[in-house]
Image (cartoon, rainbow, N blue to C red; front, side):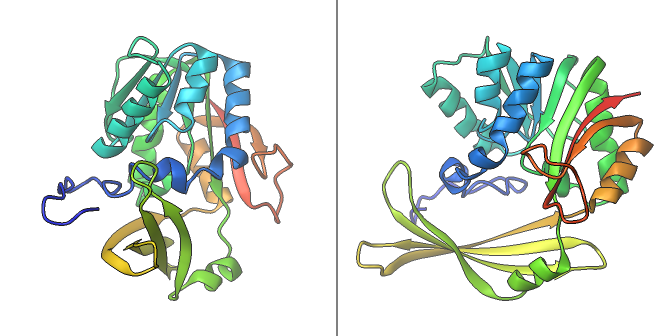
Length: 267
């Protein structure tokens, strides 16, 4: 986030400006979902494949249990950060590989007993065709009897309304490398018919007195689905939902659940 010679992102790298901040920004997710995903690794074994693995937040501790794994992501900058994280943990390519690829089209020529998709990457799928292609990728890489494990938040209108079309402070962090103060402000727009969320993020670099030294705007659009839609889409793609939960604590799924989490097998 420096001026003048700042590298420019590739056209399709939405995470270019957040890759080195990602693990700090989303550290809270480790308390939410990481124990659940690691319990599935202990149960079903490895090697493990994670789609949209990003910086390896879930993949690297999963590999510690499974012995080996592969992470696929479309963002080059996130993959680079993932490789740095792996190296810092003493994991080389014999244990974990990060592969650039689109979860709709990537083909590794390998099969895995467990495929994970943590952090709702399927909400990058804009339509039924995208979902079908992504689930075809999962089927292509599952061993017979293998499991596909993922989850999504359950968006409700009353909750969305709290954050709709208003600027709010998403948080302030310090850059993990430089210690620079960074305040992040979000402005979300919801399209209820399209079932999309467009987020405009304003990141402000601050000096120690709180003065803004630089400001950057980024955009991201996601497409949410409701649990019954996801369940139906999985079934249409040839999956059987073996287990479903209302949270990563494995609580029963119900109308008041905040998440829809599943363990599925391919028929």
